[in-house]
Image (cartoon, rainbow, N blue to C red; front, side):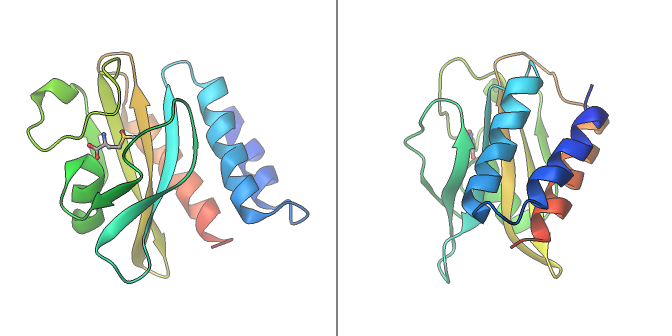
Length: 150
Ligand code: SME
């Protein structure tokens, strides 16, 4: 179900006629609309020289959490760990920032440019424990593609 989306991601990334911000938006929309258990899809990026993340393009309900300090929540932890973070049950996490009461699970995958962790893709799911290795590999692919245009 995920692999047919790979050429579509490549096509979006390579479309130089479209502003980069819009291409990132198209990727968020593509993922949310085509993967049933992806209910909110967004990019966060390091905010200049500050130790915080700033929300970039996203698809889904608006969130209050447009700025997240490093270390806070799942996103802030990934900014420091440089590792994928899969949360099968958000209720079991102490250091978690709730965006919506409907969210049951989350996956955050860091985005590297020249080896530096400059942001991440964040997916919220309203389905319990929906993410597996395929999601991790697919989102790593998405981030590698996006890294080419950042
Ligand atoms: N749940 C995230 C905050 C971002 S929202 O999911 C959009 C976290 O704990 O970092």
